[in-house]
Image (cartoon, rainbow, N blue to C red; front, top):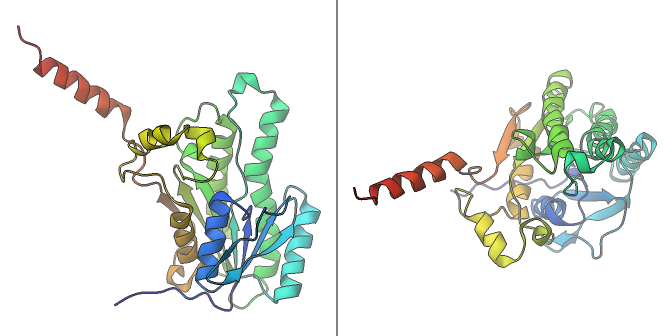
Length: 266
């Protein structure tokens, strides 16, 4: 028996939903039947669409509380409700801590922690007045659970985001559910900036137990589940969508050392 999730009649907002992971999330929600609104500071090069439908785009800088409140009021006024929010907007360039000043790192934290907080507060003001409440999904990262040289402020922000979601889940229950998707490596149009050419991407993929980087659709499917009634008892959770994570380096070193010793004759 096949199981489908139907989000028809619901309204979803995806921050940073114009490309990469965010566009994959928006497409998955569209395929499930939701009305989707994406937001970013700049419009997409082309509309994000799926299943013959297109996501609506509204410009917003979610680091500005007034801009965030205006965005969610407009979505409520135009669509009548807001059922789910996916806080996807974020990111960081590679920068070792000593190579960036405090202001640079503070901007990274602002984008990846304070902006999702600001958006969530604005969405909550709408959701808490709805009989069925709503769902908020934070897009976290494995960078928040392990050392992240070159993206330390980003990792710290993502760690804070997951903790923030747990607190929101307690404070805003039972009407609003709040969860985190903890992402590993995802293949997008910008993957070459992080992993190099196709050979580099393939080499990185071999370090993942499932043998590949995630596709944005993999993340989108998880978001559809968390936004749906099938996740009605899931809140305060951190769902790892990382293909099994990373093979521990010590295993490779131990295997290589063991093989070398077995091959050595006295």
